[in-house]
Length: 498
Image (cartoon, one colour):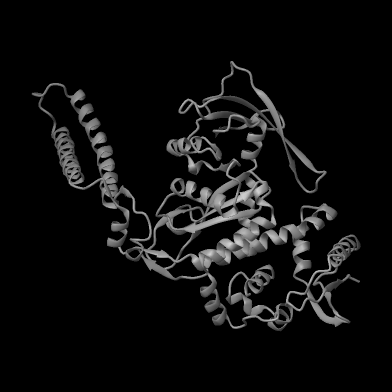
């Protein structure tokens, strides 16, 4: 019942429960029939409704709304929310601060048109490569894709793993397209033929386009010949190479140019993250509830990993070895300078020799002690047991996931409603700004005969062209004979702008 209220609140710019204080609750009650007004009551209702089943139901509704099962290509990308609270939670890579710090992961799946259709929110107990297969399988199951339908996931280089590629190749229902990690611009062969292609980029309107030219060569990947490697050189207007990249895919049947275009257009997903953060508050934590890892011991699958103490000693050993290498070089050059061991050295040179030999002995002794200490440790240890020992917590993300499902539904509803205006207005510089202003307009609700009349009162004066477009959109909405949301079964219509 209250999902509609929260959906409306998010569309009106209230990204969290506290911000709903700024809304006109009497009007919301008129629209929906019954609402929860006080923030504390909303929080209580939110906790009761924030279940995995309810979240999945909203995501299924969202998928049905954009006809997701008719699509087969999807962008997959992790997004991190930086956590600045006092709880001891697992570190993850946080791009906002450009280092590994406390945070939670949100793995998103978008359509190639930019619509978010799935996400999973969790900590960094499992890394991206471990989460990937579980998430794409759950996405397929949740959206009820036909068993025979192959889905292609376009992923950033963070997914790079030989073992994962092998799993994808052996998976009959999945394909992957990704960058080659660590590519050194060394696979282009000047002695073999290359092909050319063009990507069309739309700028300020559908008639304002920019052509991006590229050259490519195709071959089998030398690390796994079951993978297809496409070397691409993106060119500037003078036909000089701007960048050279290597694209990997297990799909050897798809058109090469289509594969390149899908990979080079991943910016659609990146732009949507920024939009979701700015206008829908997808980065909101929502709740700071948590659970101890000792309470999760029987609920999640443990894994063996290189323990924290083992990693610390290994890092220290690497540092000592680097210092010892430098000290040995000093010793070598000193011996080279003074090859005669019986040579009598000056006081200064003798002191220098004593210091070099002492440093070598000291570092060598320290290295042996650290290596012995490392041998006494188990390299692989239970991750859960170590987290329990270190008193780590896990943020309870059920409430956040439930609210975020409503947020991506609100985002997709906004975009679908925007499409007629976007088509008619044909100005991509400010169409979102104008339409958002229009949808956030105040209004007067009154009853005329058996119908509800809504008279809109925008906060800005629209030019004649824009006002005409909005009136056309209102007329199209009125023709649908939509019902008032309070369950009264009354029709409503929107009054055109004067």
